[in-house]
Length: 318
Image (cartoon, rainbow, N blue to C red; front, top):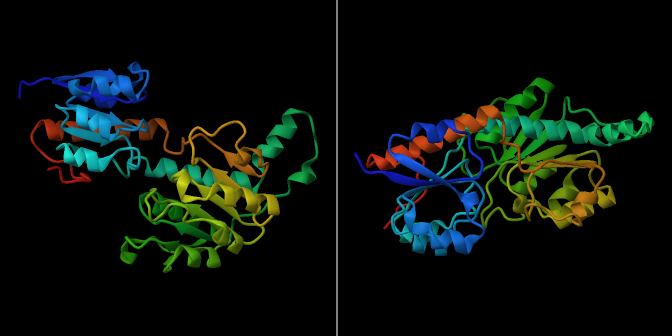
């Protein structure tokens, strides 16, 4: 094909993917647009879009007359109006699994950091505030970790945990039990996960079914030395309930990478919790994952350019 495409890129993307498309594509970064109105006003110039977190709304799709495909840089597409894309004949695909190991390692990092009070001890040490007995932690070895979701990241996390002699219980109605790692037992509800778990980690996308799937009742089922980790989506965990559980001492700590509102505001009650460890929705952000996801996203764009359909297409455009 000799047709030239214009591709909308996220503000941050590893260059390896776009470099693979330069034979037919030119690029515009989304950070060139001050707001949604400016993006919508220019939407009809794009043939493809690779997106990370900036919302792509119905207004964008209705105005994007030339758009053929939107590819999510990663897995979660809760910021993309898929119904509007479908109505406007736009394929939506994602790139799941490319940052699986990065997310799983980050979840393990948060779990250990919260259990051993690493951040509090670090802050005190930097202030020459030597009170090591105040930072007594809990060990991970031999415990049972609950998984809300046993997809790519959840399964990889479970594999990493086996090195600690940990067993897992998991709820995921969409996985084949035959594909689960050793020492992972499927249960029939989120509640059953928390009834059996000493610690828990969230690995599901945000949907109407999973919104606030982890709330007050579930958190109260964890033991007092338990830790909750969320590297999935903020809305899966009821943050007000998490704050209450930490305030009441119902759980020992939390590791949080994602938030109901991103970025969280400085006065967010969750950020006052000393026994929680926070990161900035960067669980999947490693150099290795960035390259892999960028290349996968570019491959999907090239597939559509050539008249094909990505194998991770999420809709059936009219």
